[in-house]
Amino acid sequence: MLRQLKETFRRPSAETLALRELEEAKRSLLEALSGAEYAKRMAEYHNDRIKRLTTYLKDTVGEPK
Image (cartoon, rainbow, N blue to C red; front, side, top):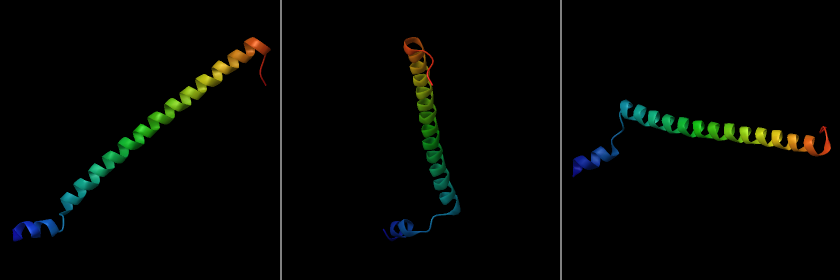
């Protein structure tokens, strides 16, 4: 029991800390990639929307400003 208590409060090794940091970096990368993918798709959506509205205006009222 005393051994378990010591293990609980023992300072983590450099390897353990590095592993935790690596896992956190992987999570951060995944979040960043997801955000980049979302932003790319939103930019594509707005670009398509602009094209659609421009075409609509050309067809109905002439050349837009």
